[in-house]
Image (cartoon, rainbow, N blue to C red; front, side, top):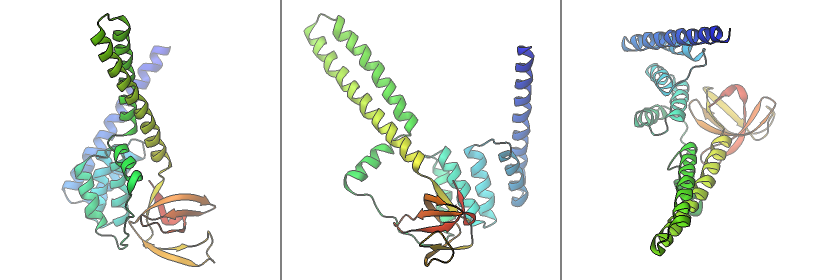
Length: 249
């Protein structure tokens, strides 16, 4: 009985994959024919099945870009970049899409120790830092065994020094991996989808206006109260925006 259920699951997943692949190819064909709205419908049909990939998000963003849909194009480029953070094509196309936005927001640069930590952390993803930590621990154990069992004084010293270096490397990698993961987990961002949105100084419509944002602008979500989100811009400005005006990444 268990084997039958397994076979059914495999057949179901295979047919599911084949169906999505067919939709993806149909979407690409429509895109190449200049039928961008129809291509978007095919790509979104795949998203409805909870299947995601950087290629799907990238093509969906490209189709929206061709239709001058500012917010959706930036949104899907950002989604693609989350899955492939080093992809140059995604970064280039995202830069072109951002050129269509109205809001000119200066980024507050990191400085000093904060900048150094950020640069080191961003060398790799948190899972790769974790892999470095595991590899360093394994090498530490192997070199410690060499140190313990060898009789040569020179080899003992060499094994002792290098094993401790790998132990230090493991500790640093674990710390960076956890830091990277926490930054990723708490870095809740969104894209403004409203053509124009009024940002308030308090989470209610009667409060004073702080500034206005337009579609395509990227914001960081700090807090949520009812149907309002507390947001922060890249230049440090903070305010409250209605939930319906943004779409979380």
